[in-house]
Amino acid sequence: MPAAENTVPSHDVLVVGEALVDVVLQDGGTREHPGGSPANVAYGLARLGLDTTLLTALGEDAHGALIREHLSGAGVGLAPVEAPLERTASATAVLAPDGSAEYEFDIRWEPAPVLPLPAARAIHTGSIAAFLAPGAATVRSILEGAPAGTVITYDPNIRPALLGTHAEALAAFEELAPLAHVVKLSDEDAAWLYPGRGLDDVAARIVELGARLGVVTLGAGGSLLRSADRELRVPAVASQVVDTIGAGDSYMAALIAGVLETGTEELGVAELARLGSLAAAAAALTVRRAGANPPTRTELDGLLAGEG
Image (cartoon, rainbow, N blue to C red):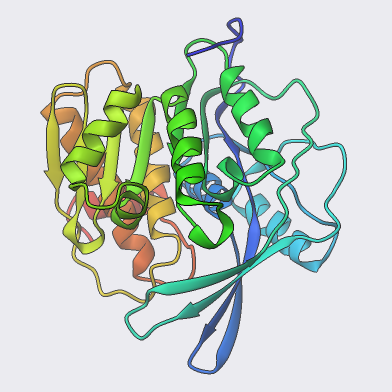
């Protein structure tokens, strides 16, 4: 894994990726929520008490202002960029009666970071930012240049409508995954990337590519966590679902928080169970309320202690 020289971290986590506005259509009504998987993860990390900076691309428009206000409210800092986009990205989500969402995107991904970037204990990326040109090349460069000792996490959060061919997307995923210590896929991501392969096999493939921890989430079925020599299934936390927007991102944020506490060197059954339970609780709290609304650390600890 290429690395730049050591730098003293000034932040807990640097998140690199898109921020957009989710326009949610349900029951004839419309709601707008700040979103985008990386922005949701950054927000979730800040809500968990971690010093978090987001490198993204926004326009100087109403949607951009909405996102900036939202992120600022949780304490997320924005890394400086050279120039704003012409317009802020958006995703229109149509919610089904079971709370699941289908998306249509209006997005350009052209980050232009002002260098050097802030040093951080961890760098997270994923989703559209890891695939969409020209910004995907910038994302890869940032990961390749991460200082030694930086924990790198990756969630591809597959959006087929924005990808090229399956072969191109799989190649992009398998080129980026070896740069990460932790890779998380949903079961839908796993089925799309590796059709016909079992989830255990997909988790093993993630570790084979070089990650120290491979995770596949299964919605209400819990999650599968795989390290070099251990595999564990962790159950989901029962919840009445309002909608599923942001659940995977809340899971990812809590997973990163947990990994920063446990490290990635020794991941036995106890560590996998703790990481999976922490992340599952965060996802459960998120699906109980509308939009990408992740828990605070107090809420999360309360649920884990049996208070929620």
